[in-house]
Each structure stands twice: as C-alpha cells, then as structure tokens.
Length: 112
Image 1 (cartoon, rainbow, N blue to C red):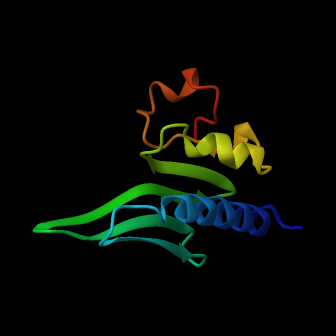
Image 2: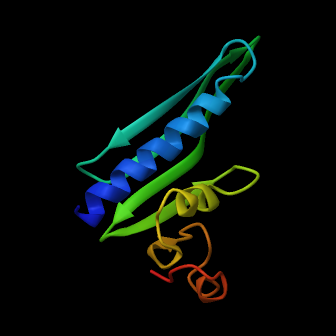
Image 3: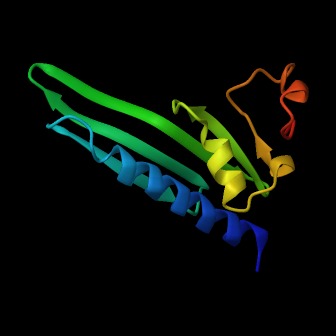
C-alpha cells in the first residue's frame, strides 16, 4: 500500500480516537474532526459555549507533507506522536513541527 494512503488512514483513526475520548467535554462543547486529504491537513476542533464563554480550540493539528507526518500542534498530555507510532507510523517519519528547527535534531524524531 502507498505510504501516503496508509499514513492518511492511520492519522484519521488516531484523531477519531482522540475525538471520541474528548466527547466527554463539558456540556455545550463539541469535538469535531476535520480531514482534508487533498491538502494533507488533519485537525481536531473543540467548539461551543459555556455560559458566556465561547471555546474554539484546535488541540491537535497534523499535516502530511512529502510522506512525513508533521505534528503542527499538540495539546495532549501524552503526545499524539506516541499514538501515531503505536498505530504504525515510523518515528523517523514524524516531524515535531511545533519545535524550533534548531532543536528538532535533539528530539529523536525526523528533522524535516
């Protein structure tokens, strides 16, 4: 199977699992997954109202760029990279895009 298609499938499954877990957000909030295969963008969105307070957050944003999985943002405790690796994505194919390029070489993940 094509690596790109395999990685798309893994990313979608991992994000759906995170969204299902986040379904227990306080009343008034919803969790949505956004998949754009054409542009290689994958997000989780938290949306909703809590009284007068509006929530619009993107706790996870992943991009698929040239067969590398770029974690652009990760606001999870354990880190979504752990879940991606457990699902079959190789460590050397994951880029921690939210880390400064100068320190990526020290993360144990891909540089770019």
